[in-house]
Length: 210
Image (cartoon, rainbow, N blue to C red; front, side, top):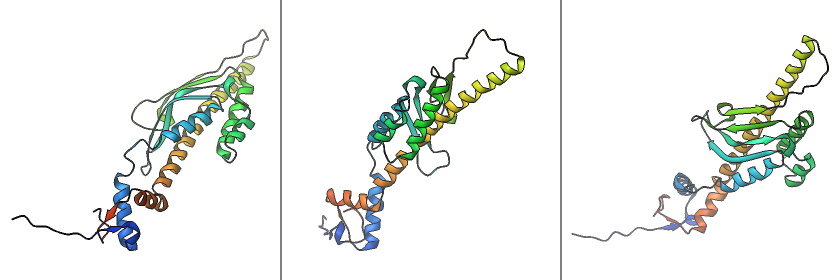
């Protein structure tokens, strides 16, 4: 025979500390069921554009496994790298970005026509697992050189190409750290509490969702 059961419910602010922690755990388990990274993606694309990057699509996984990371499809062109002061004006407190912009400009001064194309491949989400194709115009002229001089010149070109790939790797690492910071902020007690209260959720005395 049907019977009526009554359950006493509480606002989040009315719970004790242990029950609040259970309520937070409940919220965190299903909180980020939307594309919370969109704004971080947009900001990353704008910032890195100042260093000469054209980021088309970003991939990532995170944030507690050894293989977590970020990578992207896109390109870098030396002639698109703006002066470092442009980055400092856009993101005055981000010294990591300033360093990326400075390295981009340094490479551009050595090889103004250099470029890089990056394409994500496989299932891993870090740049070393991506396909990186560097185009660095080899200088040619009519000056006669010894074999040793040509070897040294080739090594210089190889070193520049390695710097370009490392620049892209630094950019990918920076993207990952921005995503990680955003995630940690969204999952912080302060932000979780604010979201629970804003949505007017109610709980049992033990902190279970009513």
